[in-house]
Image 1 (cartoon, rainbow, N blue to C red):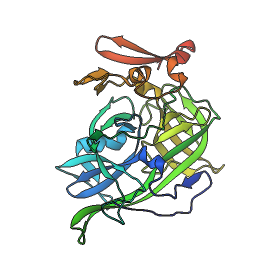
Image 2 (image 1 turned 30 degrees about the horizontal axis):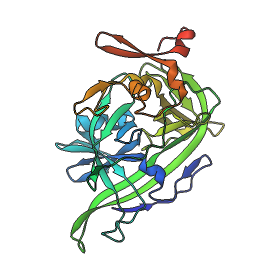
Image 3 (image 1 turned 180 degrees about the vertical axis):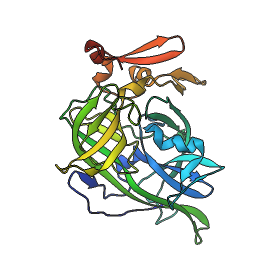
Image 4 (image 1 turned 90 degrees about the vertical axis):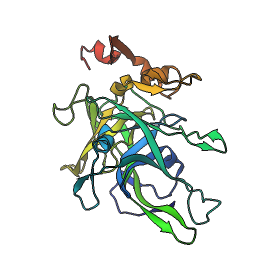
Length: 318
């Protein structure tokens, strides 16, 4: 894989990551579709377990399952064969091929989500290196508690990525030419919508921020400045500043997604078991701060929902 950064002048609070293959990029990954030889950038995702569970925005991967994707010229078409990948980036030179980086497309094997939320959980197909399962970096942890208005937040994502397959004639091999514009963006929580902002576009628990979220950053993590944990997932932005020079952007709240049923091999089992992200936290599979103790799973027959004690105390039903 070849790789590069493309510098860009941006406003304060939006800081491009200048180092290609930064360690953070081994946890927060760009998501692509590969369709009939084209590599189509979709958004951002972030890994939350060593064995490859990843979170992104549901709308980032929705179109892949429909097979209808945006082409480079801005038009849309239906592809017959579409595969979903995360791009794994390192700054380590490939020892066998000097001048090329170790990294490339990583298959997204499964995805779980519900229609009511704009959050999806994915599983990156686990590879083996020297006969041992590869383990991802897991520096991120979840902070599912409600953020507070006025608190600082920090987002991260791939706001412009380009990738294509080329043939290296010297080595007679296919390589991925990849360039990126990646940034940290900061702001404050402007308003918290405990149930939904509206019944059409943002009809799920979310919060408004003053941070700049650009196209391509969807699915990236939003960190709570007070706790350092991931409290939200980038989902939407107006893209323009108001009269105060502030942006209007939105993040899905993490906590409702912790009731989404996943399938995983747990505790040495060889078969798949149904388990929720909240139960993964309780068992120590996913990292989270103590705010997860404010959540309870509620089961009614086959239906699983989640209740936040803080909301219940204030008579607000999620």
